[in-house]
Image (cartoon, rainbow, N blue to C red; front, top):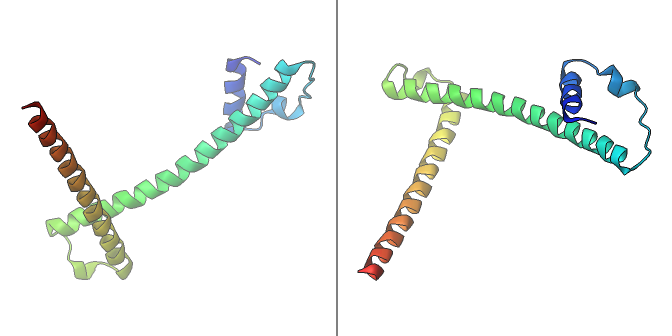
Length: 125
């Protein structure tokens, strides 16, 4: 099976049912045909998993983006904390905690890199 045909079949799976793929009966004359069939099955499952994963990530990213916009509006004084729902307040607390933890890890990494650079400079001097 050629790569172009394989890509076309994969595209058809997600757009409409590929009648060729559903009705074709593979004839396995040698190991090459078997490998082609296995490659098709593996490729289809990888593509399906990727599409599913991307759909979940898009939803998470939009929720996170909305939360970041809410954070910006709150910090800019456009809205008051009293105007937020309990759920929004809780999500913002979690977001702040995550941001604080990220900053702590960045600071520690920077300290380690600085120490390593100082040690290297002392050794070369």
